[in-house]
Image (tube, rainbow, N blue to C red; front, top):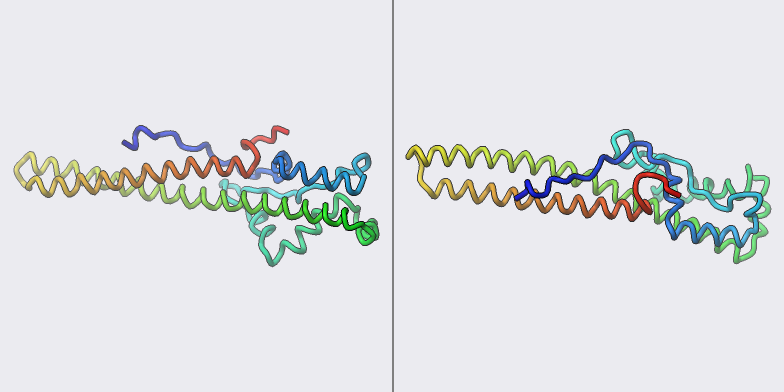
Length: 206
């Protein structure tokens, strides 16, 4: 029964910082490539993600995150935000212009890997929001069928309806509960996907 699967994922915290993604192995690897290519490790942290909140006040994907990965904005804002930690305030733009093919490749790889990480987080948060709403609606429907089944059983016991009517409502309740159970399972799996996208739990444990 659905009562046997009562565990629900903990609430997604609001204002989760993008820095949390820097613990992902693919982000770390790409950052090290940039550091090695530009040889700026001692003076600068070679690559940094844009500093935004991944989640809104209610734990859904923030507007900043959605806007960041929007194809209409990403090529400009994301590139500029990633460039800033390497070249301060444009004074080192000439360095980028003179960068070797290896350096440009390292930078573009970092940008590609980082953008993919943001996409994965946004997709997971969006799916989480959808599944949470679906679970709420299905729970209400299942409870409705439970109430209807109890009424049908009472009527049957009092000789006011036949057994077929009771069986129909029981089947409807069972189907609703099975669907609810499946959605709850999907939601738990989606939470696993979110933690994979984040590179861990909701705490920055670098």
